[in-house]
Image: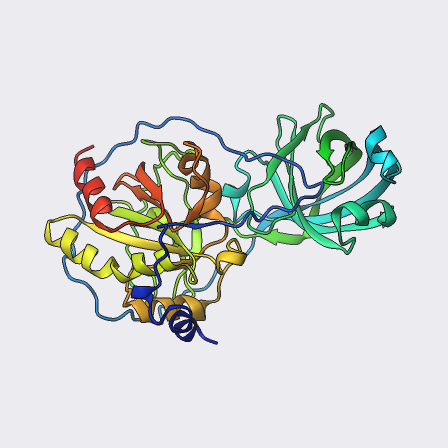
Length: 410
C-alpha cells in the first residue's frame, strides 16, 4: 500500500485523522539490553547574530521540479580507521533472584567496525565513530533468558580523545557515554574499558551486570571517507539556496540562542541537502512521521502558513525531517515516500529523509521540561541559524506564526 492509500485507509483523509491529543508519542527505540549509555546532551554558547536580510520570495511554487544538475557525490579521499574490540559481561544475581532459579553467569561479544563521519551529530564528542558487527561467541545460554536474541547485531562504538567511550545498538540513535578509560589511545594498542549497571527483575530480585573489555583502532588503507567540510558548488536539483557563510559556530545540543549543527540529508529529488545553506531564512524544522495524524494536519496547513507569512514580508521556509513511521521512527524513509508525502499535501519546500538528526539534536531541549518526545516535534531556527523556539505536538500554525513575529529582530 502506498502512502496516499495508507493515509486514506487510516482516516478517510488527513483532515479527519486528528487525535484528541495533538501529539503522537514516540516509541522508545532503545533496547532493554546491555547497550548502556545515557543521552549525550550538552550545551555551549554562541553570540552569532544576523538579520532577516534575504530576497523574499512571496510566491508559493505550485510544483516541485527535480532538475538534472549533474551533481556527483564527493570522491572519498580521507583515510578511515577500523575499530575492534571484545567484552565479557558477568551477571551477579541477588538471593531473591537466585531463589527464583537464576544462576550467576557470563557472556562475551566481539566487535569489528569501520569509521563513519557523516553523522557527527549522533556523537559530537567522539573523535572516532564506527559502525560494525557484534558477535556473541560464548554465553548465549546466559544472555538469552534475560535479553532475547543472541544473533549477530549491528552496533555503533566511539571514543573521545579525552578518554570517554560511547556505544549504542540503535541505528540513527545518539550514542550514549558508557564509561571512561585512562590508557593512551594509540594505533594498535589495546585499551581496557570497564563498566557496570544494576537491573531489577520483574519476577523479583535484581542483578548487577559488570563488563570488562578492550578496544583498539588502526588505519585502514582500503577504507576511505568523503570530506564532509567541502562546500557544495553544484546547484541543488530542486533549486534550494546555497547561502552557507562558512562562519557558523554550532552547539551540539543547542538551547535557545545557540547555533544549531549542520546536517546533510537527502530530499525528494534524492539530492543531499545541507541545513546551513538556508542561512538568511526563518526555518520551521518539522520532525514528522507519515502515519501520525497531527503530523498530517501540520502538513495540510503548511501552504497557507507560508503564504500568509511571506505576504507579511518574512522569508520563511518549512523543512520536514521525515522518519519511517511511528513504530520505526529513526529509520530513514525511501525517496518514494518523501515524494508521495509532498504530492499528497502539495508541499514544495524540502522534505528530507531524517537520519536521527531531529531527535538527537533537539530532543534534549524539547524534553527538558519533562514532556516526552512525540510527533510532530518542531523547532524554529532564525536566519542566523540559532534556535529560537519550538514545541512537541501541533495545535495550529497560528502559534508558529506568532513565534516568528515575536522573534523578529531578536
